Amino acid sequence: MSPVRVRIPARLVLAIVALCTAAAGWAQGAAEPDTAPPPAVEDEAGLDAHLAGLKPAVCASDESLCRHFKAFAAAMPPCFAQGEHLTVGHAQVIARDGTIAPAEYFAVRAQRARDVILLQTQHVYSENAEEKQAAEDLVLAVRSGSIDPANPLYRYLEGRSSEVPQLLAQRDGRTLVVRHEGPALYLRQAGKLLYVAVPDAVVSPNPQTAPLEGLLFAVLPATASCQ
Image (cartoon, rainbow, N blue to C red):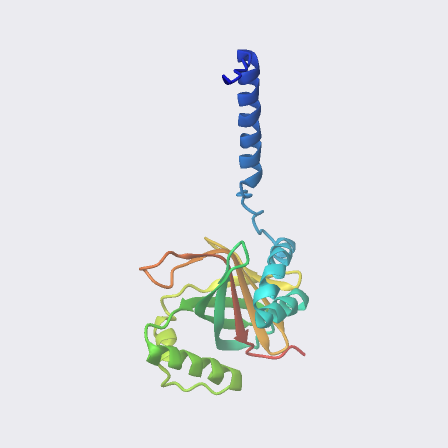
């Protein structure tokens, strides 16, 4: 028996090809990720909305950081006593998708004269085990209120203090804000903890690796309690 040949009209072939192409294009477009940038953080309300958007992913992967996020949402402006004070704590960078990357240490030096508060901030990384241990010791020392002047990181921060600009901090609702060239810094305090949030931060812990981009979030011992 000879095979039966069915002739398909050319117009029908073209219609089928066009339909398949359109379906493939629709499927491809549906699978494309949302690459639109998030709204820029310009004030306290924008900051709270930004952290609320990151919170589900953060709480799903890091219970401790989740608690700090919740504390930050209910926190108040920092309480800095008159005079000069230094605090150092741990930092991390949280990407837009909620991925958390350790960012070592963040230092804040506050100088208050009456109602004027000037801040110096430094983001520091350890290059070896000895430096990391010195940083951990300094974090504990600040928490206990007794800093060893011989601590290597403390001496480094003291030596660089004259090179770091002093920035005016101003109140914005429940937040102390430092606005300057680059991303703004937002500070709040909850009990004995000082929080620093820097949206749209770009930090480079290692010249050999790609920079970290996202929300820089630091947790530091507070230098004074709020009465």
